[in-house]
Every structure is written in structure tokens, then in C-alpha cells.
Length: 83
Image 1 (cartoon, helix red, strand yellow):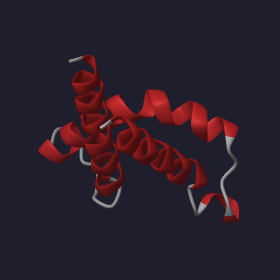
Image 2 (cartoon, rainbow, N blue to C red):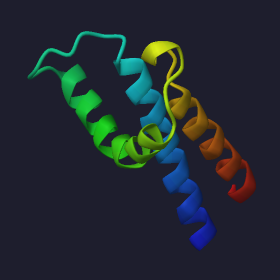
Image 3 (spheres, rainbow, N blue to C red):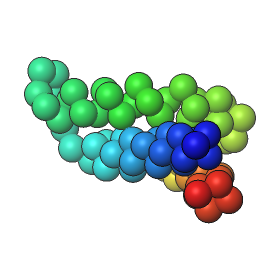
Image 4 (cartoon, rainbow, N blue to C red):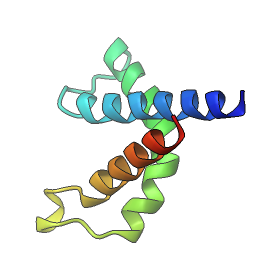
């Protein structure tokens, strides 16, 4: 039961993570549905992602988000181990 809840939470976080990445490629106009989706995804992802971003420097002057890649790999490993 607890394993299932943790698995669902990780999968929801993974979906929010991908949604957060995808929505960065679209304009963020306040008051639109896209902005609401982006803000909701960021509200879920950023509390976990910001400490990782502070601990890991970006490559190529910030053009390649290494911290995001590390967080995604760790998340994938956790999902495979638990689910």
C-alpha cells in the first residue's frame, strides 16, 4: 500500500517534471491556461529542483541544464527501484 502511494507520487512528480520542461518552450502569457499549467508544474517541481540546481553548476554558461538531467536520472532510478 505504501509502496503504491510512493510510486504514484513519483510518477506524478515525473509527469510534472516533463510538463515543466515542455512548457518552457511556449510563451508564458499571464492569465492563460498554459500559464496556469506551467505554474502548477513548477510549483511541484521547483522545491526539489532548486537545491539540485544550486549544488550542481550548469555547463556551457547555463545553456545545458546539468542539474535537470541529474534530477531526471535520479528520478528514473527511484521509479525503477520502487515501482
